[in-house]
Length: 475
Image 1 (tube, rainbow, N blue to C red):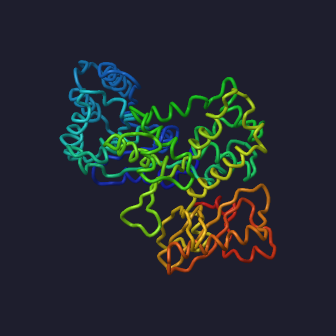
Image 2: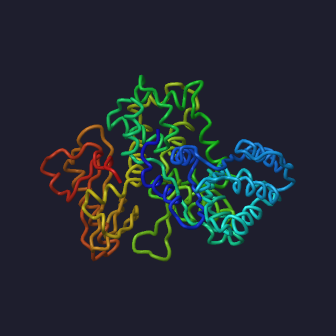
Image 3: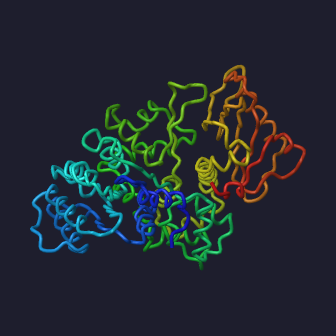
């Protein structure tokens, strides 16, 4: 059963109502549910469907393509010697179909594009010389793959025969908390919102990972089972994830590891210093590809619109790997459960909750009543000087209506209480921000917590509150 994805489903079904042939690319990270979305949306009613083979040479790919042609009804044909001939056979198959719209679904397309195979040029020719040249205008071609960078570079940004040929592109994002709550209920997990939030902090919003959760186990037990047990389902997922996305993932992993150290993010030069990578096109491409897959985000440092780009790790699954999986050197099967009160767990919880907030900016803006206001979201840091103390802001919402929301993010099991010393620290932080930036905008303090603020004589200094429940609202 397809949960959520109403918007994406509508976009796909809309392809059937167009007067011209349609070419759509669906992309997103491994396990996010791309194939499931497409198959469920069209109820498996394709005129042709094919899935590329991993780590298979051109000859094997062509053989498998022939099997798909046979499955969908093409009979007595001579096996193609190359992809140009293979697509001619596909055209022959489609021409025989009496369906009003002929939906062609090619999955894991990047695996088919083996070196020197001529696959892309053959696809270009099929689309330009046949699919769009038909008077019937009845072809709906959907290509899909986990190798996001391949889809973007070879299809979306193609400078050859496929340039500007796409009529629609759909980037499938991970689920948000609202969708994970629906998934949890449909799976009979009986999780509280706090349970769902904690699970999201470790797994992110990848539906495939959530499908492994056992409703008879607690959150801690489930996480131990998924990552640390002898037969852990996700034991090797981190390596498989990056290997599936990038042919040479070493620079990507080095960048991710470096960004896992500094929560506010790092500049390009800081990443180079930390990783010891060369400042070349390989490094630049790795940064771009990590951003394309939403593992990291890029933002301009406050008040710097052309320089001062900062990169920040925002992927919860990756953060959990570095903070827990990689640290389990003793191979304890209860590593997560036994860390409940440890400093590692507390530090990770704070960082992970921040990343959840970064993923739910829309919900935060809605609670603040500024959904229609143009904003940019940043983290901010200053070392301080003789005039003001050093300070760091977890999340800064810079608004076009002359207001800045300075957001403090705190993950706590119950209501968070602001005491005298923390109140003074907050006031000092605001002072440092105003003096360091010399901003003329109004600065408002916003607290983002799991269970809200405890009302006391200091809580009134906060201009607005965001709680866990607000993050569960529908986007």
